[in-house]
Image 1: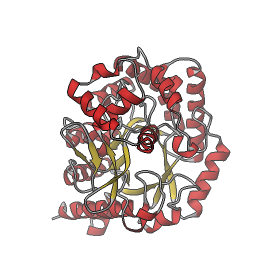
Image 2 (image 1 turned 45 degrees about the horizontal axis):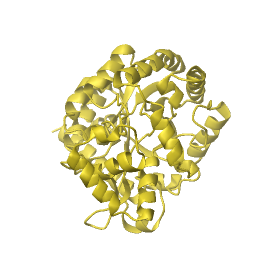
Image 3 (image 1 turned 90 degrees about the vertical axis):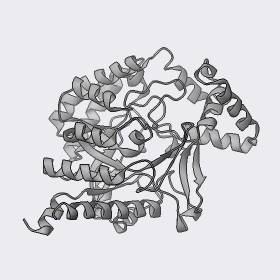
Image 4 (image 1 turned 90 degrees about the horizontal axis):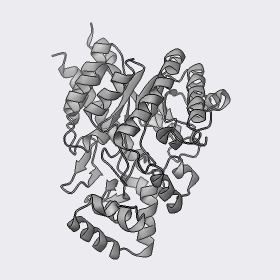
Length: 400
């Protein structure tokens, strides 16, 4: 086998997240950054509604017109009724199955989803300024406690924290202006599915959603996820769709809500229930990496055959549970070891996997632009270039 043949066999499918026609980072930008595939969704569709063939084909045509491929959907949101198994949960499961079937008919082959209660991701600062002047996403533990106890006023919240943590949170909140408090509320509730598109964040509705999980433990939520998989995995198999669950972001309890996709044991439980390659994982190094107990390379070796999509990013942990998004090749993720193991997985499977640089710092001229949090153009271009170079270096070294 020639060097060129060996190199091409193991390369990531280079993907780029795109939020649709309203995204200020265009398809042309993605192509110029080096991406060959687009990861997108029908962000305008209300959660729980069926994704119709017409809407899917329209989005696919937009991507293909730009000379790119749409093979990974991220995400088809799961309605809260399914997670709590209340109200209209069966109707929403049936709608989800119909969306899977329509995606399969349209030729979209990987469906990413998550089972996080209420919010898809959580950060307290969407414009955290780093020492070099760039900006990143940040989770500040003290700010989160201040929100949970003194703004959200969740029943029993104070019992989840130490006396010192409560004092620090109270002091933190007292030093915020009214505008800063509103920004904190916006930043945290921005993780509501669809909230960024709708540009509406209601503290009242957020409180109601959190309250709807009262009495639901981690074991109960896990069972709800497994019951959901019992229904959708057979439909996905018939439709030629690979399901890829995204880990919790961050991988620990927030607002007293349970988490069920935070570590190696969580994933094993999910795979054991539906023992099919269709039931797979979106391996996000950033989400898993926030938990120092997660051995990412061990997890990759354990789950290699069931990894269908890859998010590569690094976070920098702090002693109090805070963290921020680091550069792709720094932080607490050993990106060299991770990418090397992913190359081995691809070689073993004789299959290239879609990878996207997840998040990115706001740098250069993007500092003067408005983009989706974590998804500026130049920062992700930098991340993709670094990851492509790392991958190529690893592949070439394996031939020597």
